Amino acid sequence: MNNKKSLTTLAAIILSLSATVAVAQQTAPATAGAKAPVEDVWKYQVKRLTSAEIDTLLAKPEKLLVIDVRRPDELTAKGSFPVYLNIQASEVEKYLAYIPKDRTIITVSNHAHRAGAVGDILAAKGYKVAGASGSEDYEAQGGKAIIKVVAPPPRAAANGSATTTVAASATTAAPAAKN
Image (cartoon, rainbow, N blue to C red; front, side):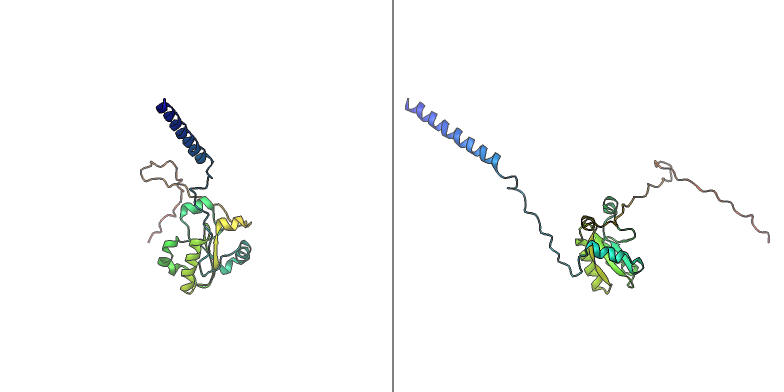
């Protein structure tokens, strides 16, 4: 009888502990395994521009160059400013000769961090960099200059297997002059 009573007590203790563990798992905060939000720390020498500062610079397009350092897929997904030079961040130093030094430059990425890094590179090379911006940050601050970038349609393949058709334009040639 003692064995039966001991087994019953042991079973009750095990069930009690199991229930406690199950309840503790269910009531654990959802953030127990989640990472804390990362602080948006600006670590670049160039200024992080506000939407108002960008709008002021955009008002003088003859003095400005916007360099968007994002990939083409990011440009079509997020949009960009009305006119920009697109050089991906990893290729900026390779294409420095194409960037004019007589204009004020704004560098752009999604949230300004790649743009900040590129702005620092350009400033170190003697370019006049007003600052960096993120297109998403600009819009979040109420900026209205971002436009959607539409990807061009696919080109027709030489063998005609493409799904789009390319229209051919007819031209007329003047008769050849007799010598």
